[in-house]
Amino acid sequence: LTCFTHLPTVIQVEVFYKPTSNWDVLSIVFHILKILPASMADSFGIFTTNVALASGVATAIFGGALSYVLYKKSNKLEDDRSRLAPSVAASEASIDTSSGDDFDPLVYPGGLINIYFGSQTGTAEDFCGVLGRDAAHNGFKARIINLEDVSVDGGGNGDYPAELLQGASEERAACSIFLMATYGEGDPTDNVEDFIQVLKERSGKTEGGEVDPVYLKGLDYAVFGLGNVLYENYNAIGKLTDYALERLGANRIIDLCLGNDDDDLEGDFDTWREEKLWPAVVERYIGKNNATTQNSTKMQITTTKLPPCEYAIEFLDDLAAKVSSYSEHSMLTSSKHYFTSVDCAVTSCRELRSSKDRGSTLHIELNIAGSLTYETADNLGILPVNDISTIRRVAQRLGYDVDAIVRTGPGEAVKKKESFRHPFPTPCTVGEILGRYCDLTGPLRRSDLKILSNYTTDELDKTSLVRMSSKEGKNEFQSKVVDGMLGLVDILEKCPSIDMPLEYFLSVCPRLQPRYYTISSSSLVNPNSVHLTIAITKCRRSDGSILGGTCTSHIASRAVDPALNSLRVFLKESSFRLPKDVSFCFPTLDTYLFCMVS
Image (cartoon, rainbow, N blue to C red; front, side):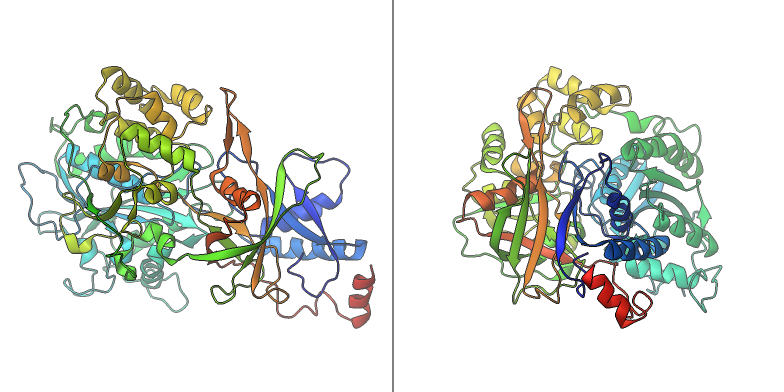
């Protein structure tokens, strides 16, 4: 591996899921790949990993032995990012982070319900938005809370976290729902690290920690975990949250539910909320025979009036008032990379395959001097940009002026304006918003179609979208949308009656997510340069058209047009590190020299 900086000449070996016969060395590479952070595949792309393998039999044996040892200890990357692109949370639910005391009990007979999320890329946050809409239909006043904002040791109820017990009274326990994603090697997402640490300490999961059995007394809870069964630490954070809350005196409403991204994460979530969560919550807080709430999660919105929006759009004359900086608290957690990324110049971009080979694999070099500092085997996040033709298709379809300069702010749905978090930096042009921050071509969830149906003016379009968003239309959704590789831009064109102002579009449209690539250069050899090996992805759709990966197409454009000489990037540390002491690998100098000569 190139990260073995003491080894000599390296060669490129490309590994696909498709087996390659008669290459015994691939078995070694396969084990090595399991301990490396996986680069995230581009949309609909072939999973490709490029590794550099030191030549020689002795080096191969060494790599295989080391990979076997580390593999036994390693955990795999588990992310809450679904294979389906995420939508923005709570697009039609009132986002309320206040105490929740000011609501009409006749409108909300179930009282207050707190919905918390631990999310890295937005999926758990999106699901909270769905629960927020469900809550209103079921007779509950919902508060959607980022666990990053929870003061776990705050006062108010003695030693209890005051935030988690919002809604509790002498007659009623507080009701809280937790949507917890697992990230990295069974790790908590960035926004719940402090919260999980307190849960571990209070529940006796840390060394020297003692159980506090009354820490969360007076709390009723339910947990839905987001994970992938293929990984070793499957849904570790969801399981830990469920376990710790009970140990700390909270009362479980229903059993822990684990959503599996390898199968149908959204389906697991829908089944859980419709068949388990809401029936149990309604029965506990309202009663079995309350007609207001039965089957309410299946209600369809038929009103033509647009609901309150979480965003407001201000049109500006120029960029003179451009905001130069944002506080960390003012940034939306799931999109902080939009604010913190840096532009790095592309200094080299060359094709690695011969002209006779199908496809394209590029070697990319970026100048990071003065901008980033990395360690070998770290991951580089690249922010993709939609191609100009896709941007124009969406703008033309919805009647947006791509050159208009706008600024986003809190809309009517945000009850406390000071709690508003910016989704991305503004002011900027509408074209830049559509290009950099909106996923216009990625796959959609069924719930996305249901939301879009509320913005149709033609009954046929509405019926079609509602049908495919239902459980009964799951197969149709799979064949037409998923297998057909349709993105938001395609749905807009196929349902021409969809019409919405820009602020509503920002609430509905999925965010364009970064793609991660394992750095293939050594930080010791190239401290000021990052090298990447990237397979350019292209797929043929059922209608014969070619769909290129959003990010790899963006990267490939740098090879075509030298004027496009930068990429917006950020670093993500890897948990894979070589041991500082390698004496167990090379007990003698003779052994080390033998490997080099081989």
